[in-house]
Image (cartoon, rainbow, N blue to C red; front, side, top):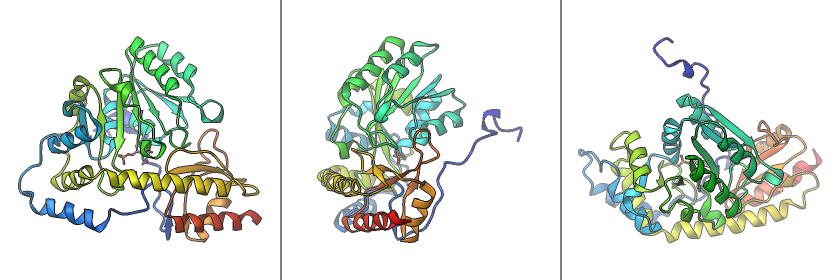
Length: 350
Ligand SMILES: Cc1ncc(COP(=O)(O)O)c(C=O)c1O
């Protein structure tokens, strides 16, 4: 295909295969849909918006509400149809990309899509942040964007703030941008906004797909200093947050207590499931601060199939470095988690 740029020739599809199952614990979604009453409020807003008109050019109304919710100036906020679009914009902007390995697959995916040089630095012992390894890479050659998710995906580990600060220091010294992905921060109760405040070398990514329970709506945002936000905003197409999305986002941002309650409930469930699973004879769960956790099994394929045979879909992660035998399990409703535990213990004898 001569019309397309050569770096796109080997491009593979995002590594996700849809499988139908009664209990879906494979995408780190909220197991609960938005309550009917909140959906009705959003629908009412949609009814009163003009569908024939373009929406706000840059989601001004939503940015205003995000700003109020997170105490952040609206001109330092970029809203996009999923934080993945912000990852893509950062990758497009970056001269090079640095990441941890393993990591959230789309950081490398975005590097490939944009033809940006990419390097993953292996996580340290117990999935710790490879502070020295990242800093050494940042010392070498030209600067770029370094992605650090905390809680980390797919490990669920929350990195100590001083470790992330050491990467932020190096970013400032060497002209990098550190992108802190806080997609799962409501489940860990962590908050790294202070590192980005007034600092052009740190941006924070957040999503509505997890604690806010809006995976199907597709929306995420970035917090930065106004200059950096304006550059990234300029890289996105105009009018990319439609009126119906804006109506839903405004509804949840007017009642953020709902997402906070969901996150607290799921964190309690996560701890309960991990504690129960730690008594399993052969499966070893890893500690997690997210709404998912890794469990190491003697054989990921056998374990995955035995869960699916009981109607439970989880995600294999055993193809990733250091994750031999690992499955990633999202935290579901209490009943779903009970079914998962029963199936996991039943699989012990297999
Ligand atoms: C670390 C991380 N960041 C971002 C995302 C995706 O966010 P969004 O749905 O806003 O594109 C995910 C989804 O699984 C994730 O694990």
